[in-house]
Image (cartoon, rainbow, N blue to C red; front, side):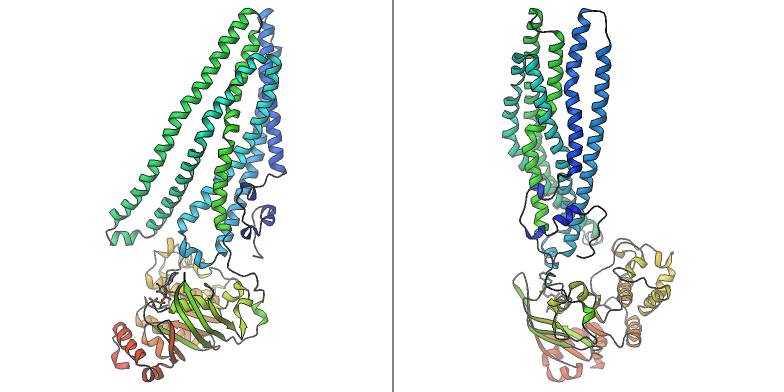
Length: 598
Ligand SMILES: Nc1ncnc2c1ncn2[C@@H]1O[C@H](COP(=O)(O)OP(=O)(O)OP(=O)(O)O)[C@@H](O)[C@H]1O
């Protein structure tokens, strides 16, 4: 939280920093009508006022020139007014859009920051692609509201008011006819507004879902191909596209009906004005110039009238986007509020304890009354059947998920009192998942490091992970780009890259969750020997099915039926716990074909 660095002036963020705990869903909770926006709108309004004078200048030009020889004076005025109006409008619009871009960038940064701080469980229940598209689409719709709809509404109100005053002063009867446009426009705009909003909202939801689906599909393209699941994936996509198509057709129908009616009303009114005005001109009660200026006002006002009439709908749309953004921002971040103890105040050596720890994913209990005590420098193994909760214990120890009951502590200090960032700096984790990012080998090695490792240190890390030869063979060494999620590397290379990264982190506790499962036993032995030589002082917690990892452990925790069935060395457990013996025989022998060791 402390080093929340922004590219932009942070006033918006500072003001709204704790917004996630306040339920607010109005667009103005996120966007800020600040002095820049007001100045921009003011400049635009000046332009609009100038534009309302143009028809009068036209009227004067026509009325003067109809009687005497051609006088160009008013045409210069018209040209100057047109130029000034364009200039003011472009300056005002630039100020507003620039400020809008800044605010949207800040909102996006704020959402990104918040997303990064959300608990892991949030991502279990939300599709990442959908969230990403939401961040882009909903913020874009807020930008449009701030930079387009609000200025257009203000300009519209001013343009309409000033023009109406002028029109009534010029000829109140003709002005009254023109005023018919308001009820006629409202007759269409208001009834369709709700339908239109509903369609727009549903469309946005489906588009987000489609983007989510597409990004997930593309990242699993190999699996799709290998499972011949192309048609399956295509059909799923087609279903969503079908829904989108239906919605687009509904929207097309609404526009197909309403737009011609709106145009019909407008043309009808113009004709009425021309007919009535024409008669008045021929009667000599109205000048040609006044009639033409009325026509110009009318044409000038159509846009502003529609903007004002549509403002409510646009507001509601922006409100919808705000609600969706707030559904992210209102989700509580990982509870780091109470924890302010800095790890540097806890002196080493570190011993880690789980006491009566109980945990459930979405009320589904996985672990019950887990007790573990891990001292500095110990080599610990967690063993159990697949799905028994081994990785979940790691998730609890690293505070990716909070305990439901019980206590996690470091040197007897409750983990919840220690700052989360500091806590996680205790661990170097090599997991069974692919945790490689798009970028170079070096980018991945130094990912999240709080220091810049020397060239020698990097080479040392590569050697520890037995990856140095592989990297030497790459065209640009550590600078080689390794593709999305490191897909240009082999599974074993990716795993060794994770090991080298964890080594560079130089954390006190190394967690190896099936860290060598993709490696051959020779490579695994080289790495294990390197660990023994270079990391003998580190605490190591391993989850492994391989006997070689388990037999060497100082202590093995055997998990069964949500609990720790027993703990001890491999040979103690083999003697004492028949379930462990059976497990080793069934699970490990299968993997190792290593019966003779037992
Ligand atoms: N994010 C999650 N949300 C809901 N349930 C989960 C989640 N992660 C794991 N589980 C469930 O929790 C149980 C324990 O999973 P865990 O990954 O801890 O097992 P494990 O012992 O590490 O398994 P393996 O040896 O197969 O890796 C499983 O039943 C799994 O389905």
